[in-house]
Image (spheres, protein in one colour):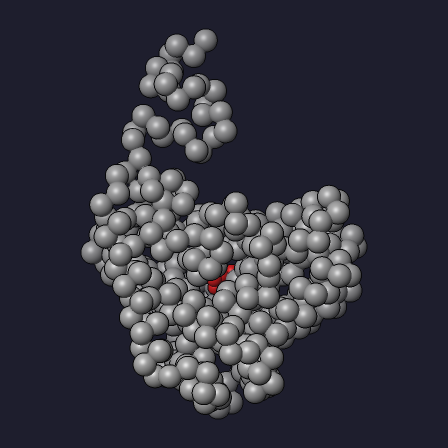
Length: 356
Ligand SMILES: Cc1ncc(C[n+]2csc(CCOP(=O)(O)OP(=O)(O)O)c2C)c(N)n1
């Protein structure tokens, strides 16, 4: 598989055929469909944003799809997943539908957080997807707590926690990984190192740039992987999941990847060169997966085209559904936000002076 030659983010070995072989035909075919579903969905979301149907924050995952898809392929139902605000990809693979995700982006009542959260707060808690969190690093302690709960309750569930490299110099990261190692919790921490925290390159913000080495400071297993390669991602996370499930031991994984778009929809990404972006597009995770499928004879061009079309159709359908869905009612503003909406029952919410 091609690599931008000499690029500092990709000095490690690329995915070998062994990873693809271990991943296998069925999983590779499914991975292609899942990554296409995310890519086409987000391209559609970008258009909806540009035309004013989505407002507020919107951080696209385009370019990083192999991390969520490969990692989540290693989990079972009942495992827990939590991530930061670049969450559409994880959500679509873990229980959210294109319809309720697009509706959430548009702030509609049919959204998976009933239009209260928007882009950064996708949720499918019943399927083990616990968001969608906007404060950098703040969900890492939640993942540690979820791992503690699984162990305390004697369950064999594992928790996967994703975050960007910008979260790594937050105190919460150190506190959480220390406790996970000390208490031997079944949590896998995955830093999606796309090299930029908003416009700040990693080497301008972090004294340590081989992030997986930070695991040593917690006496934890630390692994580096090529996050543009879906099979390799699955393979490494699968080993970490086995370690968590059978030995209740945490792992810290650095998945090196790249986002093709700006930090958010409002970022023109002037802090990096076109040449750099183009070099990474040569290792587009979907193109790499397509190539693997063709080379192995695991899919035909016709099948790949059909899956891509199906992904586009699902995105279009999601848009139509979301546009036609109603906005939440003003009088329900406190509903689904507070357990006991501001101390009032919903019917009384419009009469706050009658509270006492
Ligand atoms: C505690 C906190 N500080 C600052 C911000 C503003 N902020 C939003 S995104 C971001 C960059 C985070 O980058 P990274 O963790 O690498 O994730 P990526 O955007 O690359 O996925 C910052 C500083 C925030 N949301 N939370």
